[in-house]
Image (cartoon, rainbow, N blue to C red; front, side, top):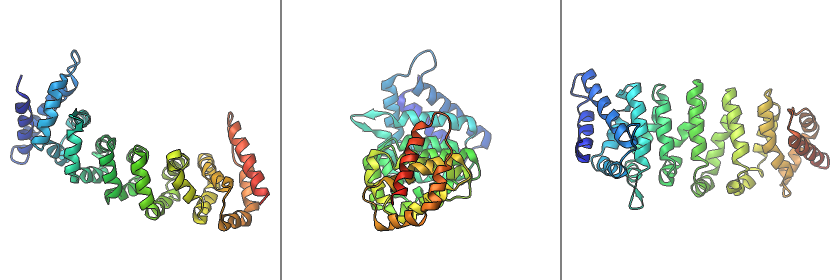
Amino acid sequence: MASTAGVVLSIKDSFLALPTKTGDRALEEVEKDISSLRQVLSGDGEAGANQEQVLQIALEICKEGVLSLFVQNLPSLGWGVRKDLVICWCILLGQKVDENYCCVKYIADHVELLDFLVVCYKKSDLALNCGIMVRECIKHPTLAKYILESNSFELFFEYVELPNFDIASDALYTFKDLLTKHESVVSVYLSSHYEQFFERYTRILTSANYVTRRQSVKFLSEFLLEPSNSKIMKRYIQEVRFLNIMIGLLKDSSKNIKICAFHVFKVFVANPNKPPGIIEALRDNRKELLKLLHDLPASKGEDELDEERDLIIQRIEKL
């Protein structure tokens, strides 16, 4: 068995040789090295990985800058080797040495790697691999914070509207992780980027793309009602423009969109401290709202929804 340093240097050399060797031969060497690395990191099926060796490999990989080579060369690799590389990436980022995640620190010191992975969502053959790699990164608050505050985060508002359903869904999955994994990081981000964030979010709530519209209103109905986001929710339900968006979504032809919109709309109505603008908007639209709520579809087993709807109807009637 080669030494840990030897294993890593072999991988580094095979990646560095990609631009200089004949294409197929160079790729074969990379594929062989990454397959071997995967076996070392995850075990061979009969025996588990040697954890001490895994930690040493993680340290060597950071020392030799191999994580950068993984990311930079991702577009040149075939489907099979990319799959193995993603598995190695996830294992490596989980390695903790003396209370520090060495690979996470490396990425935090080379944040251009995160930007590159996010941009690669535009490449249909790379998007799902990059999605897994980004989600592994944002398990760690320092990396999640970077993406949220970077220009790269803006791209997710585009990606969730991509015509490729699989890629758009994967992007939304990553988007949700960014906004739910680390409560304190997200709270600080939303407090300082409130206008910017919700201006963009409103655009996807009113998207012509049905899947985008449905998934975004569903996520909003879950996200705003999280206890950790109570301050953001209280601010959101003070604004007439957002109430009007929910009223528009209550008119959607989709039952699922209507129900998710109702779960946000009800908070506007139930708020005991409604500002005058919200009260006026509800009164101005009272007749139409009562009809929309009476017509709100409910499925078998949704008795709780019926009860909530009846309470909201009563509150609107009393305005």
